Length: 401
Image 1 (cartoon, one colour):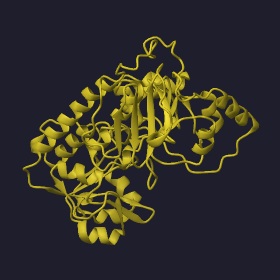
Image 2: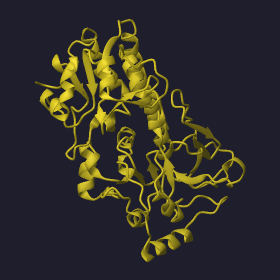
Image 3: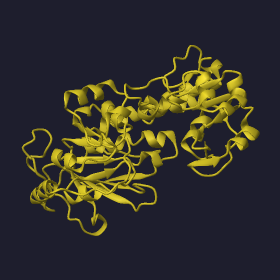
Image 4: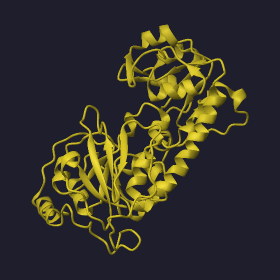
């Protein structure tokens, strides 16, 4: 659910909407609007009351922080997109005064919380909202075809969720017309965001994919909890994921590491996860290793096939994420040279494509971020089946002959 960067030219109708949006902007220091929302907004503000009694702490995520004042919280995303400067989001309890945007808060985006509506730019956001019981707040997604959640598909069909980038380009007029309280970005700055910000659309970047650890990414559920007022629920959910993941990693800690091959070819290059990457961490915690485990970095390494064959072609297990591969014949059809790999010859190729949505979206990419414990359980069952007798796979499947 990422859109290419292209130039947008706003029509007169959009300009009119911009003007209308400006007329309704909030003033710093005034009580946040919509105080008639029963249970959501504060009806009688008391400067001595702590309006965030449940305070979230972060144990694994490193790309954002949360700090608190009595009636607002500040989320700082250290790297909202690759190479970008930090951004601050001030989340003000509805019905209480917003702080003045000066000093450390200069340039910060001010949002009243709990939000009433949001647009989500990535499928990875959907499980967080669903787990928090906040899916009713979701009013827009870029395109449904990457979604696996049946509930989200149904809501798109019923019209309660709209597609705002069905042609891969953000429909600026559609977003402005819908006026969501926030548009939660996917950690990739887009040209369309300029006109949207000018129109008063509040864009908050969720850059969980820049976290290099599985639990670090999963802890971004707390970002959504801050927006939706579900902090206690987030602590419960993430605590369970953290406990399950930690217990599984401990179970695999003493085993002899199983050697695997990771990655596949794209446009003539084999993209191999670096040794400090998300994929490498999952593999290590599952009791696995690979030829490039000692490399530095959290991204990927670009290699040619000959190098991979020479250094890792004899790995007994190959782990991939290829939506269209269902059989070993599909693998060889994609590139006949794959037949030289030992894992292909022995029929030990596993792809994380067990659950695909109606449009081809992959549940591994959607739900996997929120549930690294389930991914780890699958990996342990593949690499060390003796540790997971009778395991039912969630994401991975073994390709058939």
